[in-house]
Length: 563
Image (cartoon, rainbow, N blue to C red; front, side, top):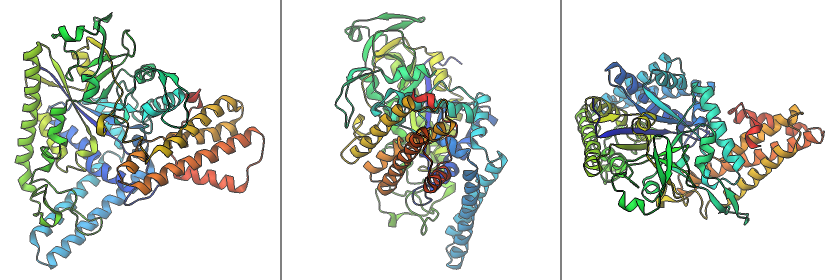
């Protein structure tokens, strides 16, 4: 196989905030059970199917550390079993209801749902109820690459202290190592949010003292990370720093971008070395290709909006099952036709074939224009496949099977793409994210400013306590400081300001953030009491027990992360 045009990298970002023991429905554990049932188990299934058909999946999957922690938790395992059995019972009840009212096709669909959930339960039992171990097995077999992330999906460009950035990344790589047994070299920056080095970085709230901040690439490289992912504009608006041929760095003048047209400056099909000053890179970035990605996620032209696919929003009764198809993605829910499972296979194949042809065309046009092989990166939230778009995993399967017969394009993991097409350009990236407007405004705005004020105070307090309290010599102080560290990590999740801004789960986001902030204060106060040899009250002991019961996660906190 020549693979003369380049590589396709399908990157799936799997993430959910810590929701175990924090509510069930509509917000909480239901998110986790739905994602495991509809996305993670089907992803494992399609990887296995492709491998059996001798078509290497070669997809890159981000599994955030906080997601891995939950999938490995015994309470999740028993909860998922109960959830699947409840869905099967719900489908059985629906079947009887439909048969009584003479609704034959709905009764057929209800039986179909019973079988579908039974297959998921059988799959879960077959893998020993251990989803993380199964992903690790797929990595060891060479089928996929798994990315790590900051441990609780913190929005890193806005984090106040360098110590907190290091702690988020160090804790993330530690969890990935413990849960999967791998040293991850690729990292998913939460929300694809990046910040370069600034000499005079100003905190977003509270503090007006400008400070020198290293670029995020420095923190990642120091943690052993070699590559990450950014949105399109960060590549197209980058500043040339130098060339990187055969491991040798050569600085360039900014004007070289305009006349050196055969090198592919500012092209999203070109991975780049990332630095903030002219020097050899230690970390590389891959940019999202917008034209290829929109084939799936676009609300207007994306495949999931096709009339034959399962309608996500219409359900039969409270928390019920879905029996309708999209029909018309602009029509109201009352005008949806019944789902026809037998009609979708041909449409899935059609869309998979079209997707592969778009990728081939993009790489071919680039090759004709520059003579270079490109790396086409298509990153998506993993939950789009299966959860939001029910047929999504089957679409991915067909893409993989189609690409396995493609001579001119290689389906590659991110690591393989970098190995096959070593980046020969070094750039300074601008600041930005893949959020609306490409900046930080989804996470930092008038609705969420107060959250950052709370977080900044907690960050500073944590750094000061680690510096001042005798945790190295006093086990009790260390124990409570680790509790405080856990609560700080949990409150830093980007999910809380996100759901407040989008109005998706405002009350839940505020409740969760405020709860972790309060627990941080409680654990900090107790650590300081222990340092002063003051006895704890009965109420304080109960508070610690309650905290541990609700947040039984991230057991191996290392206080050196904040030094």
